[in-house]
Image (cartoon, rainbow, N blue to C red):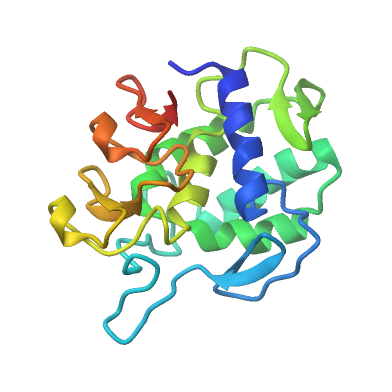
Length: 217
């Protein structure tokens, strides 16, 4: 299983790429968009054929009621942001606004486990490293960042493009992920993307057998 330090490092890499997890990138993007390299880009970028970057496809986004676990997804997002954003002085409302647009059924088990576990973590146990929250204690280290990173990754059209069954269904430079059944860019940084095999992950990442997620090689 990947260590807490490894996941913290992945979180920092994601923030640099999308400006979502830290929730305070300085760019105020509107609904349906996210910040990337200082600019707002669509989360889904459909073209005339329903595809975007590599053929973006909305895919199996979960409903607002959040499914199992009792709470709605908005309630979970709010709880997650209220717990993690203050650790590094980030704005809770901005975090909620951005994180609520990343919901995906594929991340639900890890996301629910992360949020529910964090409920019992005292604020004093949360620290800040390189601008991102970390957990000082051993509590929730197995759950922390798994679900949130998965959501952030699958909100990126380079990691979650058109539906596919085989690599030949994807554009040049893209592969077909057997776990998500969507194309992904081989050069993207799709940390914590669900996977079944190493080939389901971009170059430089490998599939963790224990967690079923793409992590650093």
